[in-house]
Image 1 (spheres, rainbow, N blue to C red):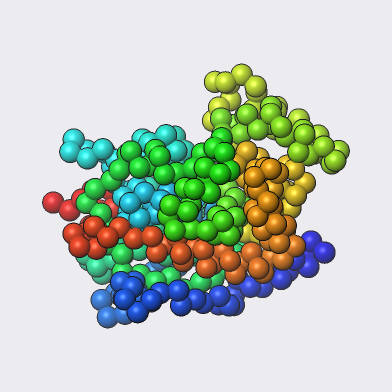
Image 2 (cartoon, rainbow, N blue to C red):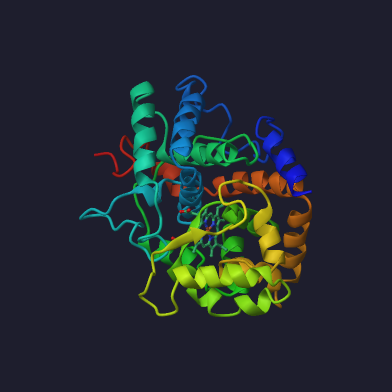
Length: 335
Ligand code: HEM
């Protein structure tokens, strides 16, 4: 059965099967925004992303997360990419990002190539959005069309990066509220955390889970005891010890974009408290139903993930539209 699902999913890589028109007539983003100014942009990013993910499949996870952390703070405007300067307090040092968010050098690398091809045309925010889509496809996930035309912000918000981004220790209700505040539904939220089907987490982000209710939620599965003891070995109970040790969030198929993260939650073996709560929390009647649906139906997950990524990518910074720019270097506002 598992083999059949993997077969089905791997074969959807090559089929551009999910294409949505979620954009209203007045929406500033369009699919052909760069048609005359930088017609090769999609091909150039795709080619570079192929190398980047081949070098290390984790890079796919890194870019998808970077896009998420960009969009939840002032909208998808490249604000997360800005370095701290004397006049600008960046987002990179905010608690959800510091010593955790990665991929800034990858963005620099892609940006350099785009700038040599079409100088001053493609925003860093668009570059990141397109890269996140390509990253998803390259590790076996679905395709979707990426609307473009975002502008880069001239500002960043350390404060919003600290408050808007959910943490793994946060209550489910509070996480739902944070997605809702961005215009994203519970269905969007459960689909989007499906991105945890790839990538890694640090011990400091799952210690309370493995020394907390992991054993309770996974009680019916004896194999999970072995998994739990291996997690405890690499993540000691004392805070400060092994804090930065990393392990895969989805321990079954860590480099494949599939629906196995939802099976992990069904088994009660979710690594992050916030993920497991979507199946186990007493306040999670709706989330539990959706988790079960995506565990059962990988194509339903792919379809919703695609829609929800477009929706998340459409969280716009209206200020940037009036006053934004196309940064030459994603780390700095143009001078
Ligand atoms: C409920 C909301 C969420 C919470 C609490 C959360 C939390 C986390 C945490 C704690 C990590 C590990 C970071 C580390 O240890 O350094 C992580 C990794 C990751 N997250 Fe989330 N996340 C959430 C939603 C999302 C969404 C919406 C996406 C994308 C659409 C996403 C994509 C990822 C990816 C791909 C990784 C792996 C990154 C890597 O390997 O470096 N997450 N997340």
